[in-house]
Amino acid sequence: MNKRIVLLLIATLSLGACKKKETQAPSETKMVSSVKVETRDIMGFTAYPASIQGRVNNEVRAKIQGYITQVLVDEGQYVSKGQPLFRLETNTLNQSASAARAGIGAAEASIKAAQSAVSAAQVEVSKIKPLVEKNIISSVQLQTAQANLAGAQAQLSQAIAAKAQASANFQGVQANIDYSVIRSPISGVVGKLNMRTGSLVGPSDQQPITTVSDTSELYAYFSMNESEYLNFLKNSYGATMSEKLKNLPAVELIMANGVTYSHKGVIKAVTGQIDPLTGTIQFRVSLPNPEKMLSNGNTGTIRVPKAFNNVLVIPETATYEQQGLVYVYKIVKDTASNAVIQVVDRIDNLAIVESGLKEGEVVVAEGVGSVKTGTPVKAKPIKLDDLLKALKPQFNN
Image (cartoon, rainbow, N blue to C red; front, side):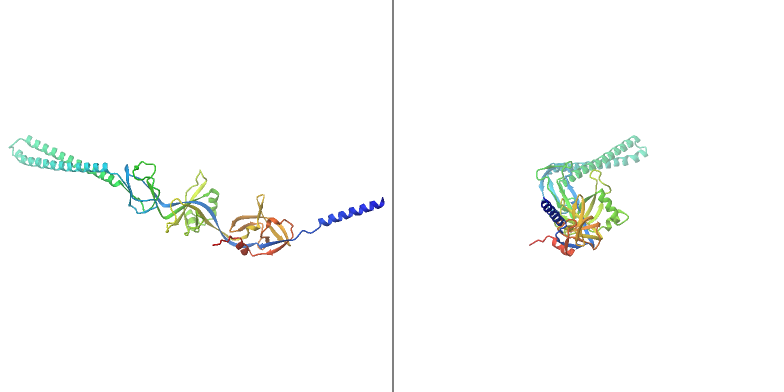
């Protein structure tokens, strides 16, 4: 019996010693790449969706009502100011013009007749007046002659007025005939043709016949929300809005195909108030368009430069998120230790750190998902630029 108790005690002690040995067994050392926290000047960008319009977009409408008989241009064609775009039928107008011209002729004939009547009445007055003065004839005859003269002069005035009216009628009809040729209001590119040959058009139409856009310079419009706008006012140099805009750097346009537009733009204007419906305020960027690559209605993304001077940076691969917080693993005495950091922006695979790290500290650069706090590590230092270069995608031709 005593022998069995002794054996049981020995077995229990041996099992306890094994468990203690397992508990105290050291963790396996993990190989990790590491980088030092650096201080750099970084140029980032804030991106905003943008809509693009020509500098001037003029709707083309008919000034008179009529049917289109000729379409003289095509969509996408460049036209000059005053160039004919459409012709309207003018049969009725031509008839009206003939009638108005005939009215002028009749009025001229009436003027000549009235002038003759005035001349005759004037001769009669001149003949009778000395006879009345000598008491040869009665003054009643002179009064009658003078009344006839006044009547003739009145008829002449009426004839002159009738001619003026006839001329005005003719000019009005002629103007309408001129309006039957619809011309381009500006130099630019013709948009979609909403009406074609045979369409009835008029000045009260809701839809324009087409639009001509001056695309020698383009306007790109983008919006900021109220918070972004307040930060813009706070961080921009200048006492007034015009000074702030003047001091802004040039901006880039990323076209719809992802390619950067070859010409930079300048923010020229900001609307005066925040739209109560959208809670945003609109900015206008001026873009040159010498190659006519862009047109009215294009879309893209405006990238506004954002400078970060003397800031702490680490590779994005060194960070991970958990419950809304951003972490890194610092390497202290060959041991990984997680730390919360504050990231203000992420640019070109770099995380810009506001707090939680100091310059010169060493962090795990990659593979943070396989590391835990307290893990013994053997660091393999790597230069930050070499790591960033490796992270950039490589494209083969």
